[in-house]
Length: 196
Image 1 (cartoon, rainbow, N blue to C red):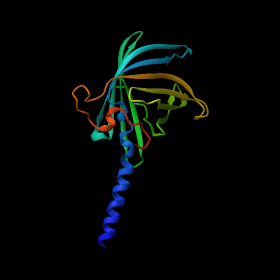
Image 2 (image 1 turned 90 degrees about the vertical axis):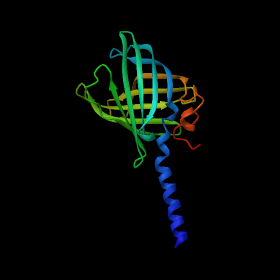
Image 3 (image 1 turned 180 degrees about the vertical axis):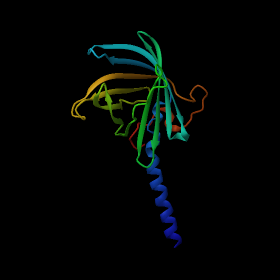
């Protein structure tokens, strides 16, 4: 009976560990970044600008917040990405708050996960009376850089049109300036969706 309890305890630990494995997926982003933006206007023309971002953990590691500053051609603006991880589904949900309308209605969160170092997150909503599927993709993640892309689909995901690309370049890692780190994953060495 004692062996059975030990075996069951071990299995519970293994399953709990697997459920929380994705909670560190965004640890690569903790710290400060310079960000180059490319945004597609409704006319189809792309314009570019610079910005910064800072990301940090919240909710005891089951969430994080990314504070963004955009140096747009028309002046500086801000935005915040808030992300939470659900161990029951192994999925992330991401909400966006635009500083130009901070009390506006939040869009439905994009939801998804990382697989093989690439994160894809989706939501369905309506823009100007048309059904649209939104996709956020995190890719090309290294300790010093990352790429984020937003794309829309007006045909339920058959075709996609990118409309915003952000190229992240690291400026600091949390704790590096003091010699103390928050966690091994916060150094940016771990790649989301992979086994270390």
